[in-house]
Length: 84
Image (cartoon, rainbow, N blue to C red; front, side, top):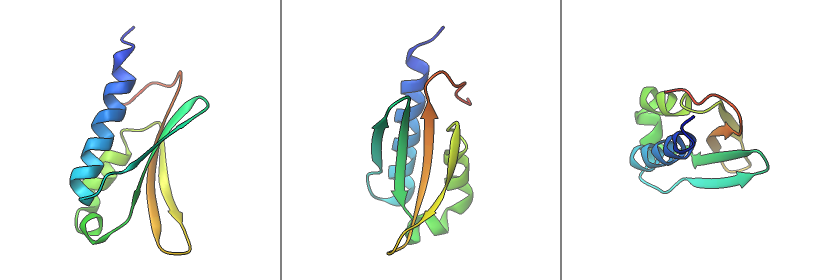
């Protein structure tokens, strides 16, 4: 079993979100999971198809409305199969 694969997938997804959004995403370590969040900005809106491809790398993903905008997020759960 490749224990580095999930960490590599997390690093790859965070790096891709940084490139697409022009800002560093937030990487949040939770019990049993790692969540990556990025504020939806104009750069991400212009690259929606690419954003969706990055979000699909996680074991779960979605959009969350906040009082000031939207956040795109994806998570990698411990013990889950990470999509290639």
